[in-house]
Image 1 (spheres, one colour):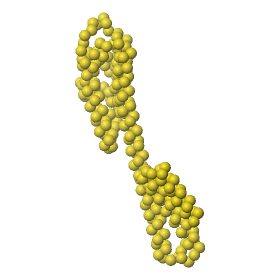
Image 2 (cartoon, rainbow, N blue to C red):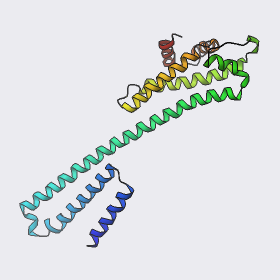
Image 3 (cartoon, helix red, strand yellow):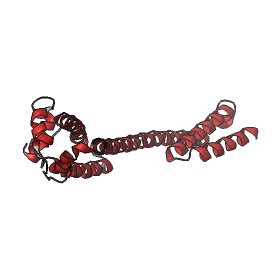
Image 4 (tube, one colour):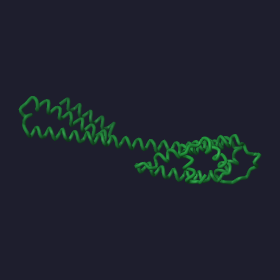
Length: 217
């Protein structure tokens, strides 16, 4: 009787703290294994009742059911793990994309003297004298943009053929936004100037091919 009370309390505690389908299936399988063990120990090896064909059939069915539940538990755990990984990757990409935009905007906030480049990147307006340009800062922010851009392009090319619908949809949406941003950036004379330098020096083939395909640059 004490064993049954302990089992009941154990199940109640774990269900309250781990109530996912995988956890429940695991606990059910453990309980069935325990019941099978008790039956085999008490009746199968220690009494004539254990040799009854009906009893043996019940035990076999119980063990088979336990194995099936265990298999389903493992399967659902794998599925749950994959979903968790996919969600983490989507979140990582969201953060990475946010950092790309935040770093770009933050740079121009910290360097108001670069507003002429900001206006040309985001609004494609050119209202400055060549002598007013700060080419050192232009080079710095351009390299930051190219570096982040290359990382995002690499991620998109790696995962856009994924079978996960949620991640694929997210990547497609992000790619559309990236193309809109880059379309505006490549409308900048200064940006194109630094892209030619970066392309021939620090860029990788994957990024070069991607930009060539979408912007013919």
